Length: 171
Image (cartoon, rainbow, N blue to C red; front, side):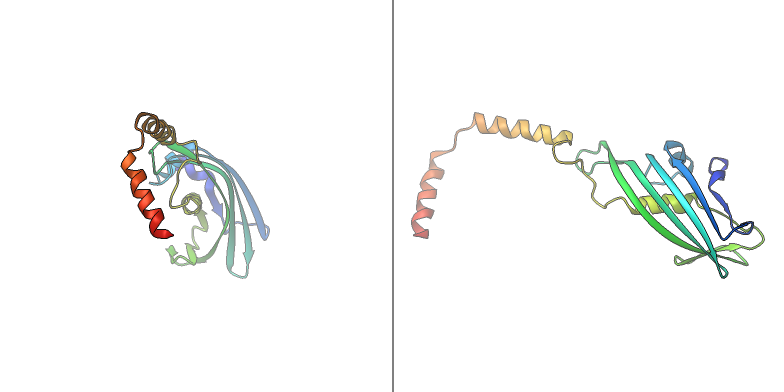
């Protein structure tokens, strides 16, 4: 976890009511976090911590691309992600994460936000991810095979007779 020490936020030691952090997230971050969805990416992330009466509001912002497997061809593709997410944190007796509010032990007073940042990035990835049209390697294979089929096989003349019958029924 030493690789992720730069993502520790000292809530208890805040001097002013608002503190900002900036990070560049790359493959080393995703390797250190060891999350299942993302292993590679290049993003710029920011965090603004605002202290209000007993509660800290953490506003995460990030923009960049992550590498995910295309659902069609399974090759890695760049998936752009950009979002802003908010997390509320308070100091308490023990660590708790109930989804809406994270409680950090008051004795420690620090929160490592690396996993929170990873989860926010992962949530921005669409459920279905495919290459843009024309960029998937399967698109080229499909175009080749369909053009070969069109040139090799003439249309069966029986289909023309069936079309005539259908056209007569419509009239």
